[in-house]
Image 1 (spheres, rainbow, N blue to C red):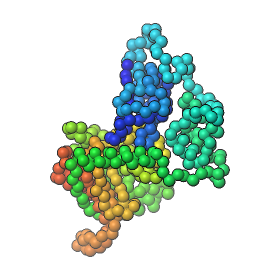
Image 2 (image 1 turned 90 degrees about the vertical axis):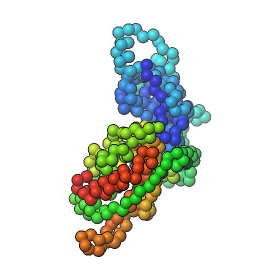
Image 3 (image 1 turned 180 degrees about the vertical axis):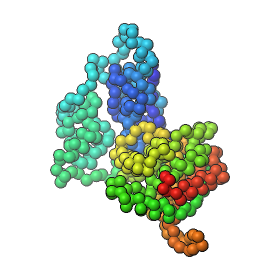
Image 4 (image 1 turned 120 degrees about the vertical axis):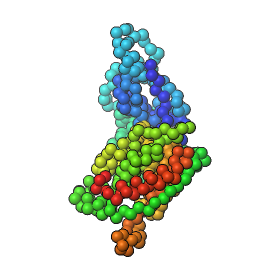
Length: 392
């Protein structure tokens, strides 16, 4: 019997609230399939299961906060299920959901009765408050009669816009997010021996290639230069794999290159979900993935693997006007790459003086793992790769 534990969905996470179960006892669950939704201080996260089998028992009720590592469900793995298939199975202890419940089917959920406790996910409650929607007037379609964010969005769609309430300036989630960021970054600055290297990179070839390429594309298919930076960082890590690692009292090299992106949240705060296997993806695929990741991050619909699988993080403040950024490493990674804005600077090229678009790339590195030679090698590789954008 496999224990399914409350996962760690970020280096600063110590506990999480089980918002809803997506599976019930007796349900089949495949590897990578969503089994639960968990609320952290930064986002609501859809948690995948990594043990294929059958849900045996749910140990934690919805709306319950538990510490990381706490068993929250039992899953009968495939090998166990096969061994038990020929034997009669004794009834187990009553699960949280009624044991007599048959296969779940889509049914029309009744609206809540005024005065009764409304079962609603935190994200849905927040959205309803912002839109001025009465939760008791919403038809619930979630598990166990829970109102989901999609239910609220459907109610907003049919509500007159004039009656919607203005968004509040701040909420409890923003306070908790700031506290989580403060804890994580303080720990990183205190425990990781940072050092920083910078390199000015001529972006003439990249900018010219991007402009020419986008002329041939529809507006919806156009690329942004940030995607070129993501792919270039991923390819540079192929040449310097010691930077694609974690520090866990020793160096642990990571076989996949998953580039985390620092995404600003509306109302403040940052979340750094990862674009998985960035080195193997085309620019078009990365562009689509980038858009999707930003949208889902701000909507609170991230997967657990996207929050926990990053092997390096990029922070790009160029759009906000910063010339350069010296970032703080996201634990337990060993490197962070920062980019500032593209500025026109005087350069000598082929004996001629002229203005060239230049970007400042900064590497923040963990000196327990990385030295100056390796860091410089990475930045040199990054520069060289960006000079040949047609090969990305």
